[in-house]
Length: 235
Length: 209
Image (cartoon, rainbow over all chains, first blue to last red; front, top):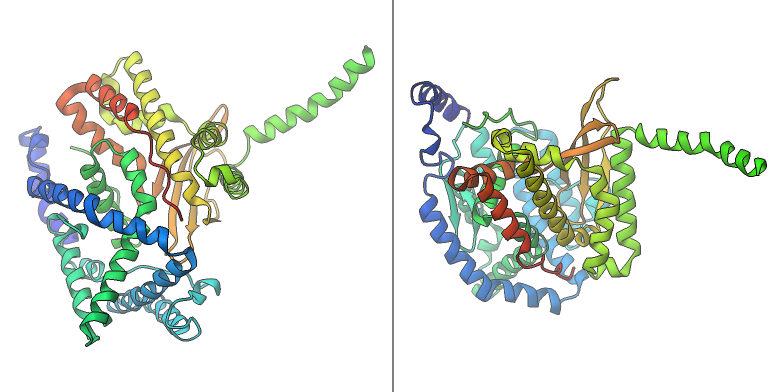
């Protein structure tokens, strides 16, 4: 990220001075925008027709305590990966918190279905391979919208693939159980989005663009541990 | 008559001081008071929890909206194109943007029921006219979300002019969107786009929790 900025900054400065108006050039953040927009409409169509109705049914059928237990169970696995990435980034304190949570929740929290650690004040945190690669100096790469997966970048998407590769679910040999768990995990994630996606609908004039910009900013914020350097002024 | 006047007059300093105290309420105290007030109201009102839109809107208009500086928010969201807008256009932009934000909040408000807020110590020097009030929202089973309120001092007390959620500034996110629209269809195009958006379908009722 940093090295990318270093390469691009002089080019941009030159651009601004010489051309004084390369604002209309294709977006630097989203060079694949036409392709991404097509993928976005594919996603919306499939989601509206199948995934969202299934997620809504899931919420209606299962009472909240059960859904919370499901969320906590998968959240506990997320915590493992948060800890691994904290460690890979050399952040011992955060790794300790994350693994402490996993230890507590996996045992006294009955395989993660109760988030005891949060009740005891060890707050949940988030970290992932995309951020680790970013801290190691990998640039974001192009923004991508992947149907049924959502907004990502080349770097974050690579991180997600690594995560899937190492996912504990993958070690379950019974295919039916493995697929059910995977499906439930997906459904749980999708159901959690039901509450907030309405905001996106009402807030945005162009849903695709709003989501993209919010995603990229939120990731930048995470990459810099909540203290991102000021963004370059527009144009 | 005199007694009545005096008894009224005797209340005056009290009323004034209450007003003054409110006007000078520190920005972090303001954020805390408003947030806790709104959360308590949501938790205790079944109609609000069920998503009664009239009540939700009333809550926002009476308790939240007065604490925002919508003109400044709009100016920042429109960015450098703001100066090219005439006063009438500026007023229209502000009205439309305000409507958009209120509608957005209406759709989201009831889902905050299970949230609790953590308030970070305020870093502020005497005489500062702008501060950032930092808070953290905790939701069961999820990582906390940082929410920062950029506040400015106005004659009517401190008002928020930007909300930064997990590093995403509301104003900046809209600035990208607005400047694209202004570039292709001008200020009036932006007013029209906002108007169309605001006249569109009402925010969907919040999904059951």
